Length: 163
Image 1 (tube, rainbow, N blue to C red):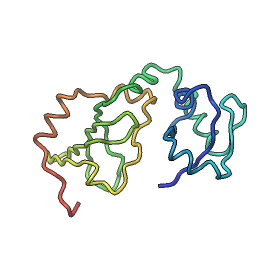
Image 2: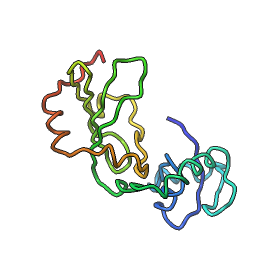
Image 3: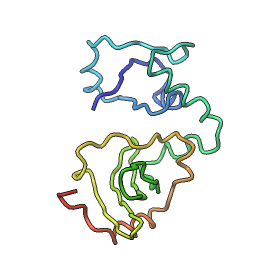
Image 4: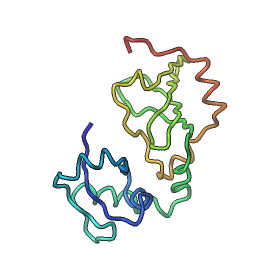
């Protein structure tokens, strides 16, 4: 889907995630090998100045680090969240999401104000980028139980091919 890429020298992948908001650390050797010959900016994580784009991600992360809940959900294999939908053009919807360790949706239930509940999974989405930054302290307040998610999943109807 695109995005910005950098070679970041750091002591660990976790340090990169704790330093920059909304980043994904690629450690798969095959993916890394595809970019070894590209002329990506190299950055030392301790450098005082970052390249454009990465500087904004560090500036977003800096105030989060001291807040309660920072990184509280980062080491989970699976977590469940209740989040309001950000789309202003549609009917207000609350999304219940099952999230994997990379911040991507595994399954989702959309609850509309009128009581409609629609469920969907990766086969229903043309793209599945990370939808949450697992170190964001605001996420801790959005966590729900697996039981609550599964209960709504069971009552929801599957998203149709026209949606």
